[in-house]
Amino acid sequence: MSEWPLLAGLGVAVFLGTATQRITGMGFALVASPFLVALLGPFEGVLVVNVFGLITAAVVFLRVFREVEYRRALLLLVPATIAAIPGAIVARTVSPPLLMIIVGGLLIVALVGSLVVRNRRLFGGKRGAVAAGFVSGFMNVTAGVGGPAISAYAIASRWPQRAFAATAQLYFCVLGGVSLLAKWSLPRLDPPQWAACAAAVICGVIVGELLSRWVSPRAARAFVVVIAFAGALLILVKGIVEIVPAP
Image 1 (spheres, rainbow, N blue to C red):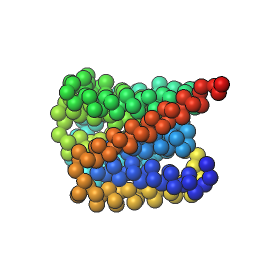
Image 2: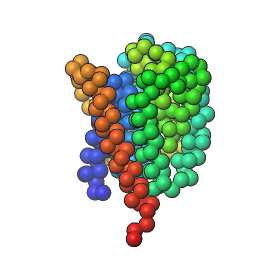
Image 3: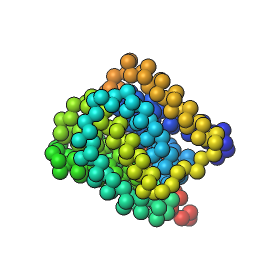
Image 4: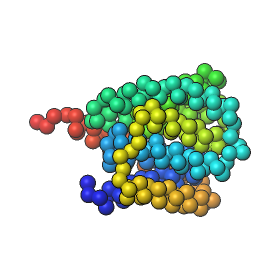
Protein backbone atom coordinates (compact mmCIF):
# COMPACT_ATOMS: atom_id res chain seq x y z
CA MET A 1 0.00 0.00 0.00
CA SER A 2 1.34 3.47 -0.91
CA GLU A 3 2.16 5.95 1.83
CA TRP A 4 -0.76 8.40 1.63
CA PRO A 5 -3.57 5.81 1.64
CA LEU A 6 -1.82 4.04 4.52
CA LEU A 7 -1.48 7.28 6.49
CA ALA A 8 -5.14 8.08 5.85
CA GLY A 9 -6.22 4.59 6.90
CA LEU A 10 -4.18 4.71 10.11
CA GLY A 11 -5.51 8.16 10.95
CA VAL A 12 -9.15 7.26 10.33
CA ALA A 13 -8.93 4.01 12.33
CA VAL A 14 -7.28 5.67 15.34
CA PHE A 15 -9.59 8.71 15.13
CA LEU A 16 -12.77 6.60 15.11
CA GLY A 17 -11.49 4.43 17.95
CA THR A 18 -10.49 7.41 20.09
CA ALA A 19 -13.77 9.27 19.52
CA THR A 20 -15.72 6.12 20.39
CA GLN A 21 -13.70 5.63 23.59
CA ARG A 22 -14.41 9.22 24.65
CA ILE A 23 -18.15 8.88 23.97
CA THR A 24 -18.79 5.45 25.48
CA GLY A 25 -15.89 4.89 27.91
CA MET A 26 -14.51 2.02 25.81
CA GLY A 27 -14.53 0.73 22.25
CA PHE A 28 -11.17 1.95 20.93
CA ALA A 29 -9.88 -1.54 20.23
CA LEU A 30 -13.14 -2.95 18.87
CA VAL A 31 -13.39 -0.14 16.32
CA ALA A 32 -9.71 0.37 15.46
CA SER A 33 -8.26 -3.15 15.74
CA PRO A 34 -9.84 -4.79 12.67
CA PHE A 35 -8.73 -2.02 10.33
CA LEU A 36 -5.25 -1.61 11.81
CA VAL A 37 -4.74 -5.37 11.50
CA ALA A 38 -5.91 -5.24 7.88
CA LEU A 39 -3.51 -2.35 7.16
CA LEU A 40 -0.42 -3.52 9.07
CA GLY A 41 -0.84 -7.26 9.64
CA PRO A 42 -1.95 -9.06 12.81
CA PHE A 43 1.15 -8.62 14.98
CA GLU A 44 2.02 -5.04 14.03
CA GLY A 45 -1.62 -3.94 13.96
CA VAL A 46 -2.30 -5.22 17.47
CA LEU A 47 0.86 -3.47 18.71
CA VAL A 48 -0.51 -0.17 17.38
CA VAL A 49 -3.83 -0.90 19.10
CA ASN A 50 -2.00 -1.56 22.38
CA VAL A 51 0.03 1.67 22.18
CA PHE A 52 -2.73 4.06 21.18
CA GLY A 53 -5.36 2.28 23.23
CA LEU A 54 -3.12 2.93 26.24
CA ILE A 55 -2.68 6.59 25.27
CA THR A 56 -6.41 7.10 24.66
CA ALA A 57 -7.34 5.49 27.97
CA ALA A 58 -4.74 7.62 29.78
CA VAL A 59 -6.17 10.83 28.32
CA VAL A 60 -9.72 9.90 29.34
CA PHE A 61 -8.50 8.66 32.75
CA LEU A 62 -7.19 12.13 33.60
CA ARG A 63 -10.75 13.42 33.33
CA VAL A 64 -12.47 10.68 35.37
CA PHE A 65 -9.87 9.43 37.91
CA ARG A 66 -11.95 10.53 40.91
CA GLU A 67 -14.57 7.88 40.10
CA VAL A 68 -12.16 4.94 39.69
CA GLU A 69 -12.68 1.87 41.91
CA TYR A 70 -9.06 0.85 42.43
CA ARG A 71 -9.66 -2.39 44.35
CA ARG A 72 -11.93 -3.73 41.64
CA ALA A 73 -9.42 -2.69 38.98
CA LEU A 74 -6.73 -4.69 40.80
CA LEU A 75 -9.01 -7.74 40.97
CA LEU A 76 -9.27 -7.67 37.18
CA LEU A 77 -5.67 -6.74 36.44
CA VAL A 78 -3.94 -9.59 38.29
CA PRO A 79 -5.43 -12.41 36.15
CA ALA A 80 -5.18 -10.24 33.03
CA THR A 81 -1.44 -9.82 33.61
CA ILE A 82 -0.98 -13.58 34.04
CA ALA A 83 -2.93 -14.29 30.84
CA ALA A 84 -0.74 -11.89 28.86
CA ILE A 85 2.13 -14.42 28.92
CA PRO A 86 0.44 -17.24 26.95
CA GLY A 87 -1.18 -14.58 24.76
CA ALA A 88 2.24 -13.19 23.82
CA ILE A 89 3.52 -16.70 22.98
CA VAL A 90 0.59 -17.25 20.62
CA ALA A 91 1.03 -13.82 19.03
CA ARG A 92 4.74 -14.42 18.32
CA THR A 93 4.66 -18.05 17.17
CA VAL A 94 1.55 -18.33 14.98
CA SER A 95 1.87 -17.54 11.25
CA PRO A 96 0.40 -14.17 10.11
CA PRO A 97 -2.52 -15.61 8.05
CA LEU A 98 -3.51 -17.98 10.86
CA LEU A 99 -3.16 -15.18 13.41
CA MET A 100 -5.48 -13.02 11.29
CA ILE A 101 -8.06 -15.82 11.38
CA ILE A 102 -7.63 -16.13 15.16
CA VAL A 103 -7.91 -12.37 15.67
CA GLY A 104 -10.96 -12.08 13.41
CA GLY A 105 -12.60 -15.06 15.07
CA LEU A 106 -11.91 -13.75 18.58
CA LEU A 107 -13.34 -10.37 17.63
CA ILE A 108 -16.55 -11.94 16.34
CA VAL A 109 -16.87 -14.18 19.41
CA ALA A 110 -16.27 -11.18 21.66
CA LEU A 111 -18.87 -9.09 19.87
CA VAL A 112 -21.49 -11.83 19.94
CA GLY A 113 -20.70 -12.48 23.58
CA SER A 114 -21.11 -8.81 24.47
CA LEU A 115 -24.56 -8.87 22.85
CA VAL A 116 -25.93 -12.08 24.42
CA VAL A 117 -24.39 -11.85 27.89
CA ARG A 118 -26.84 -9.21 29.08
CA ASN A 119 -29.26 -11.86 30.29
CA ARG A 120 -26.66 -14.25 31.70
CA ARG A 121 -24.66 -14.10 34.93
CA LEU A 122 -21.58 -15.84 33.53
CA PHE A 123 -19.16 -13.31 35.01
CA GLY A 124 -20.78 -12.49 38.36
CA GLY A 125 -18.87 -12.38 41.67
CA LYS A 126 -15.13 -12.55 42.37
CA ARG A 127 -14.69 -15.72 40.32
CA GLY A 128 -16.36 -13.97 37.44
CA ALA A 129 -13.97 -11.04 37.80
CA VAL A 130 -10.97 -13.38 37.71
CA ALA A 131 -12.34 -15.20 34.65
CA ALA A 132 -13.16 -11.94 32.88
CA GLY A 133 -9.71 -10.53 33.61
CA PHE A 134 -7.96 -13.66 32.32
CA VAL A 135 -9.99 -13.76 29.08
CA SER A 136 -9.54 -10.02 28.62
CA GLY A 137 -5.76 -10.18 29.12
CA PHE A 138 -5.30 -13.04 26.66
CA MET A 139 -7.45 -11.37 24.00
CA ASN A 140 -5.80 -7.99 24.48
CA VAL A 141 -2.37 -9.43 23.66
CA THR A 142 -3.49 -11.61 20.74
CA ALA A 143 -6.28 -9.52 19.20
CA GLY A 144 -6.00 -6.12 20.88
CA VAL A 145 -9.52 -6.39 22.33
CA GLY A 146 -9.79 -6.74 26.09
CA GLY A 147 -13.06 -4.85 26.49
CA PRO A 148 -15.88 -7.34 25.83
CA ALA A 149 -15.00 -9.69 28.70
CA ILE A 150 -14.79 -6.75 31.10
CA SER A 151 -18.13 -5.44 29.81
CA ALA A 152 -19.66 -8.86 30.44
CA TYR A 153 -18.41 -8.75 34.03
CA ALA A 154 -19.75 -5.21 34.49
CA ILE A 155 -23.20 -6.26 33.26
CA ALA A 156 -23.32 -9.46 35.31
CA SER A 157 -22.16 -7.74 38.50
CA ARG A 158 -24.45 -4.73 37.97
CA TRP A 159 -21.48 -2.36 38.10
CA PRO A 160 -22.74 1.27 37.85
CA GLN A 161 -21.90 2.69 34.43
CA ARG A 162 -20.02 5.81 35.57
CA ALA A 163 -17.77 3.88 37.96
CA PHE A 164 -17.21 1.14 35.38
CA ALA A 165 -16.32 3.59 32.58
CA ALA A 166 -13.84 5.39 34.85
CA THR A 167 -12.24 2.20 36.19
CA ALA A 168 -12.00 0.79 32.67
CA GLN A 169 -9.65 3.64 31.68
CA LEU A 170 -7.15 2.68 34.40
CA TYR A 171 -7.56 -0.99 33.49
CA PHE A 172 -6.84 -0.38 29.80
CA CYS A 173 -3.85 1.86 30.61
CA VAL A 174 -2.20 -0.85 32.68
CA LEU A 175 -3.25 -3.70 30.39
CA GLY A 176 -1.89 -1.89 27.34
CA GLY A 177 1.48 -1.54 29.04
CA VAL A 178 1.44 -5.18 30.16
CA SER A 179 0.62 -6.33 26.62
CA LEU A 180 3.53 -4.37 25.17
CA LEU A 181 5.93 -5.69 27.82
CA ALA A 182 4.74 -9.27 27.26
CA LYS A 183 5.54 -9.01 23.56
CA TRP A 184 8.65 -6.86 24.28
CA SER A 185 8.07 -4.85 21.15
CA LEU A 186 6.83 -1.51 19.82
CA PRO A 187 5.22 -0.82 16.43
CA ARG A 188 7.68 -0.30 13.57
CA LEU A 189 6.03 2.88 12.31
CA ASP A 190 7.92 5.63 10.51
CA PRO A 191 7.71 9.25 11.79
CA PRO A 192 4.81 10.33 9.50
CA GLN A 193 2.80 7.29 10.64
CA TRP A 194 3.44 8.05 14.32
CA ALA A 195 2.45 11.67 13.67
CA ALA A 196 -0.76 10.67 11.86
CA CYS A 197 -1.81 8.40 14.73
CA ALA A 198 -0.94 11.00 17.38
CA ALA A 199 -2.90 13.70 15.53
CA ALA A 200 -5.82 11.29 15.20
CA VAL A 201 -5.86 10.73 18.98
CA ILE A 202 -5.99 14.48 19.64
CA CYS A 203 -8.75 15.04 17.07
CA GLY A 204 -10.65 11.99 18.30
CA VAL A 205 -10.66 13.22 21.90
CA ILE A 206 -11.87 16.68 20.85
CA VAL A 207 -14.60 15.39 18.53
CA GLY A 208 -15.61 12.70 21.02
CA GLU A 209 -15.91 15.33 23.75
CA LEU A 210 -18.28 17.35 21.56
CA LEU A 211 -20.30 14.38 20.34
CA SER A 212 -20.68 12.93 23.84
CA ARG A 213 -23.15 15.74 24.56
CA TRP A 214 -25.37 14.79 21.61
CA VAL A 215 -24.94 11.07 20.86
CA SER A 216 -26.90 8.68 23.07
CA PRO A 217 -25.01 5.75 24.62
CA ARG A 218 -27.29 3.32 22.77
CA ALA A 219 -26.51 4.88 19.38
CA ALA A 220 -22.79 4.89 20.17
CA ARG A 221 -22.86 1.20 21.15
CA ALA A 222 -24.71 0.33 17.94
CA PHE A 223 -22.03 2.15 15.94
CA VAL A 224 -19.27 0.23 17.71
CA VAL A 225 -20.91 -3.13 16.99
CA VAL A 226 -21.57 -2.44 13.29
CA ILE A 227 -18.08 -1.09 12.57
CA ALA A 228 -16.34 -3.80 14.57
CA PHE A 229 -18.31 -6.63 12.94
CA ALA A 230 -17.44 -5.30 9.47
CA GLY A 231 -13.76 -5.05 10.34
CA ALA A 232 -13.63 -8.46 12.00
CA LEU A 233 -15.18 -10.11 8.95
CA LEU A 234 -12.69 -8.26 6.74
CA ILE A 235 -9.59 -9.62 8.49
CA LEU A 236 -11.13 -13.09 8.93
CA VAL A 237 -11.76 -13.36 5.19
CA LYS A 238 -8.33 -11.90 4.40
CA GLY A 239 -6.65 -14.51 6.63
CA ILE A 240 -8.62 -17.35 5.03
CA VAL A 241 -7.76 -16.13 1.52
CA GLU A 242 -4.05 -15.99 2.40
CA ILE A 243 -3.94 -19.39 4.11
CA VAL A 244 -5.96 -21.35 1.53
CA PRO A 245 -3.75 -22.28 -1.45
CA ALA A 246 -4.86 -21.03 -4.85
CA PRO A 247 -6.28 -23.76 -7.14
